[in-house]
Length: 359
Ligand SMILES: NC(=O)c1ccc[n+]([C@@H]2O[C@H](COP(=O)([O-])OP(=O)(O)OC[C@H]3O[C@@H](n4cnc5c(N)ncnc54)[C@H](O)[C@@H]3O)[C@@H](O)[C@H]2O)c1
Image 1: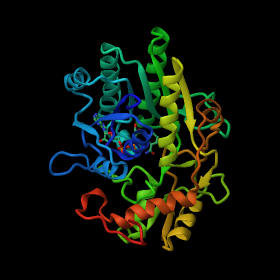
Image 2: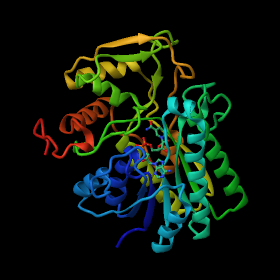
Image 3: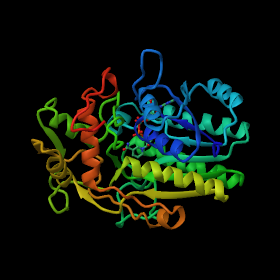
Image 4: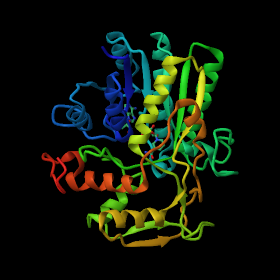
């Protein structure tokens, strides 16, 4: 008997696929949509990350290739399945690209969300977990950042604004209609991979996150890691972030869903972070230590719009969701590197190379 059926958008992507492992293990049934704008598909239109999820969990996943901008396709899926709740990961997320192509970002992220909310309402499905981001806080006015920190004031990029605008939308609809039962999770900086080495991060679009870049340097595919800004007011001058293991994010989603199913929340927001600030140089050193590699780096000018220091106060999630991050920075690096060495070409290689005795 499954707990209930979760509709997962963007589930072929990095965080979504890892989250599905935990959802299946917790007893949920999942129906996944993705349009492969940033995830790898196989020759038969299957989602490669989800094949690995099936291998790991021994369970099967219903998958549809579907663009959230295609509302009638979305409607057909809701008409076919009885969907109890939704986790909405689907979005495009490159900060740099969002500044170059703002319309693309507003269209994909905002219209995708609007279509989904309208279809959910049409089918009487009111439970939603939304992937928000710590970017909604802009430049922090105090640290560690709590959920009470102001949002939307100093967001310097279009991607971050799409998350902020969606949060505003969610606040308005939950205020107008108390049937809605929504949690927005503000992730800090996801890192790492599933400990099996079978799943990890394999974007199609240019890298948006630091870890794939570090590991490209470790693999010798990039000569040097470029670090933006060495003169921030931090211990070593490089930017400080709150890195969180992707499997911790995954359990955070299961905790959020179970709270929504246990009790009516209307609208809640939680930070998902570790509460610890780590500088870019500390991350690089930890990666070198646990992988035995050397990462040549060069420090260049700050990048416009980058924030110097950002880390979470995640006490509210602990208190109300009963969730706390468990994995260390070392584990984030080890797990990412295992994925990278076992799958030098990500999901695109036909065979998975087993190394270091991991099977
Ligand atoms: N990775 C991060 O650093 C981070 C931090 C905070 C928040 N988030 C948010 O978490 C969510 C998941 O991020 P991720 O890192 O897994 O990204 P990802 O790109 O790996 O996954 C997103 C998935 O959504 C799909 N998608 C995008 N637009 C779509 C559309 N219109 N229709 C159907 N599918 C679509 C993509 O193909 C991709 O598979 C996103 O909403 C992202 O903004 C990510």
